[in-house]
Length: 479
Image 1: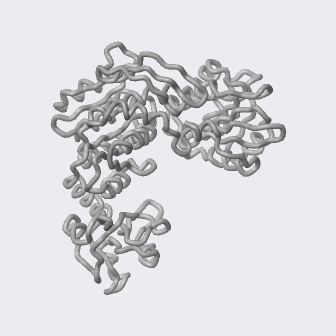
Image 2 (image 1 turned 30 degrees about the vertical axis):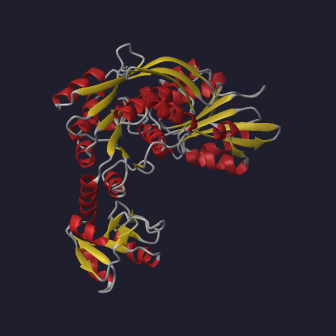
Image 3 (image 1 turned 30 degrees about the horizontal axis):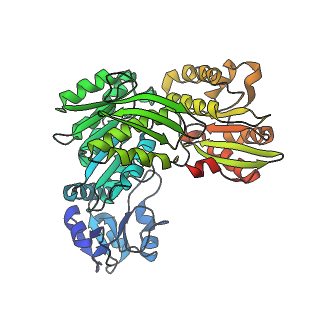
């Protein structure tokens, strides 16, 4: 059975208004911007980034089997007259052109996801649910910015039945051009929270920036909004101003069309009873945390709006597992028993930090075990940073966290607010905190590690896994 190529080189040339150098193979199996991971038959785009210029790696990409490389006209002479190249004025601009061509040929139901918290988890849940019902394409990892979105769209097969794209921002004006590229039939805003406050005057300004997603919704499309969020009314008004008539809300609010009726929270999963667009469903969600359950309502609402079967979608949620750095659990083998390690190191803001502390509070510990939070700085909070870090003490008390280790200058504000009995240790960097955590844990403990990506808390996770090799938690593997 022949495999249908993602693109032909002729179609790429036409979409990008490129000129041809050398002899190009017609079938193109994929799109890559990384010469280290490129696979034979893919097209390599020589993106010029903040640190590296992709043109410096064209030779390596071609040697690794790239079918062709997309390069700037000003640099084409570097690669010889026989090198298989598509030559353009601007490589990133050409990728955007290819993304537009991809969307134009697509017959899929397209869903776009944004929000202050839960974008990637919601996108991954949609991918999981919809893949059981038809060919589904979704953004890889957190490819949600000015190059990630066009790359994800250009990679979408024309035969896809569903396509899910994550759209992020940390400044106003960033979402609109991306969503106009994606043109979703359904758009989700998971929630609006005080994140990126370094770049915004307040939460209302953040809501307005998230509302840019409405600008690209296709005529007759729908939006899915969090009715329990303080910005629901503001977002709903903005959606109507953009001509969107179908506004579906989710939450515990009695007016929500995707409404949580009951929930039973467990250490590694949740049991959910909900009303989704007039249909009652009961399902097991294979991830812990009330915040995950709330976002599952948005997942089921959006799936239904996109034409998926609701019963099958809710059944699929049983097998959902966390993405890397977003709650993945490992069992560490320490003297005398095991330690549960919860890796939340991908990123952090006040809302996601409170949610992670809630999950830690429900995690089972051994007879002598403790619930230990290892917390790194939450970045991009501007002048509110000290107050928001100090405020985490409320969640620590509410969820009965036994011991807290703090890392970074902003977390010093939390450290100062902690009662003496909860103080595990403090250091100005993850590297300096590492030894304290390694020597403190004991059998029966549950340890949750979280911080903004820039706080480098992943180094502590890596050190723990190296010192105490174990295995992925069995209860995660089972759900």
